[in-house]
Image (cartoon, rainbow, N blue to C red; front, side, top):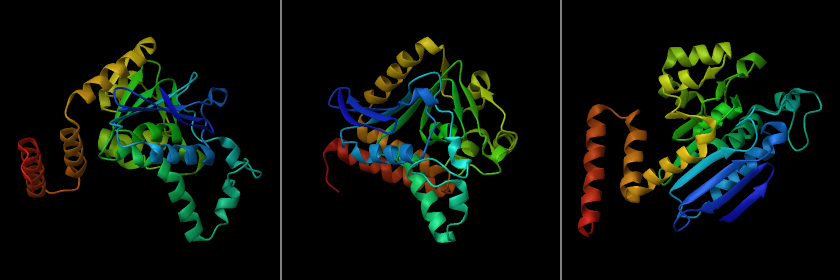
Length: 263
């Protein structure tokens, strides 16, 4: 294993044949992997550090919780070191506030890149920012003790770390609204039933299940997986005829590549 990063509660290692698998670990179990601006900067850096050999990015966490969400120190007037408090953010000019939130969102964005498949191994609590981080990934394998919750509205806020669109895509508008507006827990059985979890396994089997799925993802030719991910991600915004055209174009590229025929 090769360590690429270890800072601010985020550790990144490379492994697999030819360094094809990157493992990003939330590593602040004493605080239940609560997130701060420093966490998000480290996660953003993790995405930038991944070499081109990486095909699968696994997100996991140490300790009893995947992530308890935002470090609530930021809602106090004094805030936390290295991150403006909510009171300070509220006084930013509109453009500066927009830029600050956009910077935070970068930590949640790169997991959707077409050149990798991202996989969250989720156990225990995944609350607020933790829930949104799991939603940032393409796939979620969950332990049977998982508890998702979107608690931002309970604080008078909204989910703003890119989680609203994938949540609606996965469970539908009405259920997404109910989950966010009530802040209730979504446990393992429901998570699997409504599509939040691709797979639920006993906690002791989580690492093995993630390893099996990772191996299956690596079995197919990389370019075919990349093209397929791009097709599926674009399907939600294309019309039927536009999607048909995108499929034809992608298949043409694959056929030419397999046959060794230039463009």
